Amino acid sequence: MYAIIVDGGRQYKVEPGQRLDIDLRDDANTGDTIEFDQVLAIGGDEGLQLGSPSIEGAKVTATVLGMELGDKVYVEKFRRRKNYHRRTGHRQKYTRIEIGDIAS
Image 1 (tube, rainbow, N blue to C red):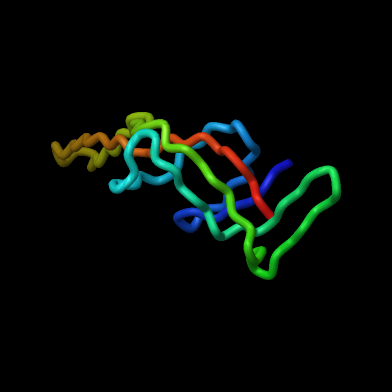
Image 2 (cartoon, one colour):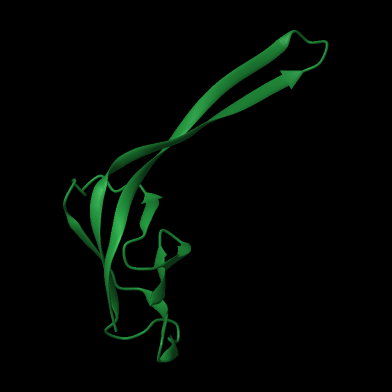
């Protein structure tokens, strides 16, 4: 069984037991439960159930595993022959979750 959910303007295809990194949620602590109410589709053995735009009453529950840091991304600015060179780095913060139950 799988579901397609929306979080932070992105769509994710999730299955029970899957671990996923979503945008940082400051209010979520390790062990908390998150419910995703915007479920666009649920698929399984009985077929595909589509919403328009979302399925009424469907939800996906997930458990927060903790906060993670993404890969370091370097941004460089450079102007040739002008003695101008700048380099900055950025690491995005994510919340790691584990998908639990998919209820339709």
